[in-house]
Amino acid sequence: MGQYTLIFMDFSMPDQDGIETSLQIFELFKSHGIDSNHEKWPYICCLSAYTDPAFVERAKNVGIQNYLF
Figure 1: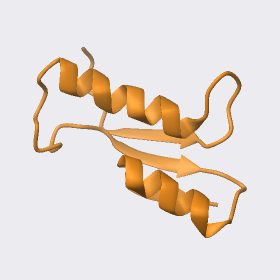
Figure 2: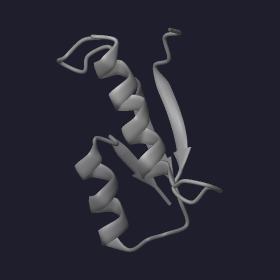
Figure 3: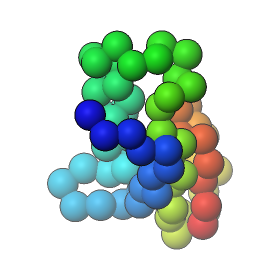
């Protein structure tokens, strides 16, 4: 499994949104037993044109560390 330190994630993508994709990334790290403290997990920054605070809150609630619009 490659080591990524930073991922830029778009909120709105075809097939699934950035929230779902980020959750899958976090689950992948968990399933491989990689650092339960999240220290070795990638830093995910969500990029979006959505400025509604509910989108920002949703992103942060799943573990996305930053949200840029």
